[in-house]
Picture 1 (cartoon, rainbow, N blue to C red):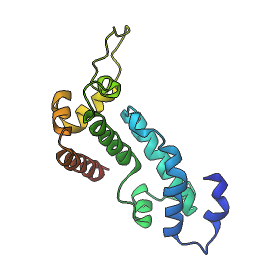
Picture 2: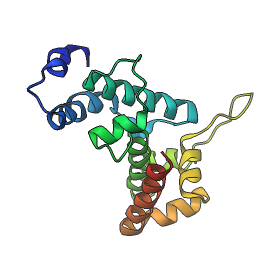
Picture 3: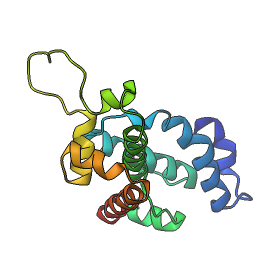
Length: 167
């Protein structure tokens, strides 16, 4: 974002072009391997904060100006937040891995069938826990639903649209 400062300050470049530049040059670097992230509420807030920082930087909005995040998103025309995009990528990746052959190492890891003992202490939030909470069912049910690509895509679309409405 900082290296593109000349572009952000240039008034001859439209907001739509600047928006496309952010979405093609900045966000892909940030979203590298986002499918494997375990998102807690803290990380979702940090992702939203980074996104708003990028949009404010692009528009040249100072922090001293009393502009709400909603007004900035409406000005640019953003309909889907970055955290919702990350969540949809995670769900799509789960569906992709779950449809693989049964002896695939990725599928065994995702389904939690790796043997061994867990360390002491509070159990951490696992990657599969966010899948279960997003879908609202057990891991077995999520795996069964992901077997049908069309049904899984519809479910992912419903979950991400619900996230979009909540934001």
